[in-house]
Image (cartoon, rainbow, N blue to C red; front, top):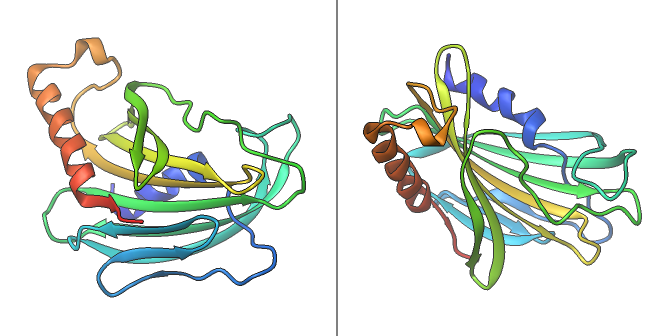
Length: 202
């Protein structure tokens, strides 16, 4: 499957995003392959130059999971997609910013609830606490390894940013206890690659 199709597999999983009230928010990918958001949240993320910026996609919709109640809030979503065009590895990065636009709605504290979790926890980057999760997604031809990091922001916890790093892999990754030695090595390599290729610098 072409990498271009991978992002459309993940949009429903990760996309419920951002609307701005008041001041105009600037979001752009700068020439040095740094994603910049001026507010909600303010962040700068340096992406390995092997990953070419491919597309920005804005969406609107309803969000019902991960929220403070059962019914849905309106959200605006900004997605930014990057694809590895240099190394030859079938990898992509996408950045998703979500903001609930219905007053008094907020995101629940736990960001990631996934199957096939291989690792998870919290890390502090530039003074901010991010949640992270590494997991596998089973598909008919090639499974995916995914490392996602994110945090909730906004005075009412109504904004969320997620940075997703994924790679197509072979083999069965459905049970962490059954991974082979080669798969363990690949998992370690994948984790280190993701930390090197995505650097949150502000």
